[in-house]
Image 1 (cartoon, rainbow, N blue to C red):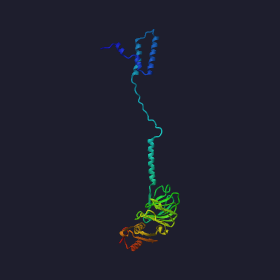
Image 2: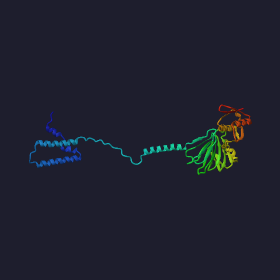
Image 3: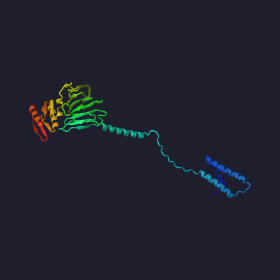
Image 4: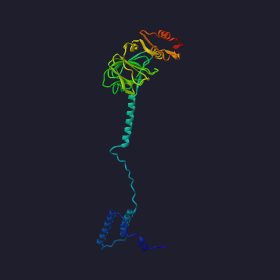
Length: 327
């Protein structure tokens, strides 16, 4: 069925309907055009307008309306991230964690204890970072951290050493076999070997005042003055009462001498092995509790061994790298 031209035009949207579908601004522009056209038509009412001119004018109006009806193309918008203001918490947390790690590593490095050991057969004189001086006996070792002399004056000793401590506001503290010696400024000899069967620590003071106590029991400290000595072992929780003692015997090792007062033979043999840098093997288990006092101004190892064996009913023989003590 063929529709007539009249019916087709009847079904097309009116100009008013088209205008109602436009946005406000476009609608106002179109109304202005329409009104201008209508005014021109009234001015030209006495003139005949050709059909071609009318069709051309209507065509332009329909084109403008059709253009307004087309869906507008969306323009993509790129939104740049805004610069954060204020505290950047993730970054601050990362920096804080890095700082703490650096501090921990630095503190660990500063607080790490480094040890100085004296070879067997030698002694060693040291000047400590705080200006104090120390002489170590053969085989002894001393340890302190990199903050010594700055934030602390604490060290550890395994062996024997003679200390001359300069005065200072920070106490000078030595830990040896869980025993503590604490001073401000004085001189003393300290002997404390971890290999000692009873882990005996012997303190002999040559000047000033020294506190001596078990690390777990500082309330039971004893105070020694010049010319006094005291001992503390694993067999006791408090130091022995200070007694008068000759410094000559305590400091004999510093003068290349050898002195023992009622010491176990095992302690004496260990000392001889360190002093002369030899191996001394003891194959006589029943002499564990045997004790002896000796003093040598010019010690000779083989002479000392011969005299000890004579006194205690023992014998000695040479080995590839030292001596053997036996029955």
